[in-house]
Length: 330
Image 1 (cartoon, one colour):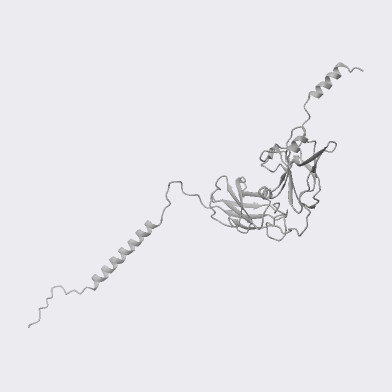
Image 2 (spheres, helix red, strand yellow; image 1 turned 90 degrees about the vertical axis):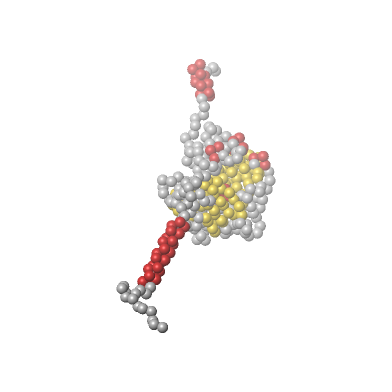
């Protein structure tokens, strides 16, 4: 049976129309293992359920599986994918056995929060992955999907939450140089990515925007992690700030930060401090107090000398006026 010409034309026009864009950007609604999972079997598959249909090629190209110390790394070429159509899902079946007793994470990056050469996952209608679900392009890696977990393994596991043992500036410090670096020393090795996401520096005055900066990592003599934060611009002189690490920061075993040192994981570390006054303009010497001290000392010495001379003059013997004392007769 032949379709009427107008109906055939309508079908052709509908096929040529672009797909209707989603109201919200896509995000993961469920993962297995869950974020923070422990004792995960080493033969497990990694499963993601999506809020809408995804561009499967972009998901595979944006996937990575690494240990939190970044000593091992896998991508989509190290396994096979199965993507669900009825319920939007993506399942990765590794071609290897996961390492035992190891803190790992898998990540699907977003074009809005892309890292290195990661292209970023999108929906079939082109919206970028938006894992924090605000329909906005955020600072990397807030839009990425990241799931941390620890595989099962023999031997005792680390269950002690990490703490911040030292900070520069110290909590409550005043007069901190506006151009100084901020330093945090942790009680153990940390998951660097989770710390950097949890890190913030804000002005106590609500009109100040969060301060951006460059983060570098090192270890002290005991092998503990040391974070150094160099702000991109000097802080505002004579202003209050709060340096914080949220309780979502983790160590290499997945334990949450005990930032408030109460013995329980999940507490935020905060160090409030105030900056010093503005430095003198370049080339302008700093006023020295020594010239004034020298002038004051000289004035005191002159005053003392005049006083001594006056006292000596008063003690000198004198003869009464008009009185003559003849010399004695021999």
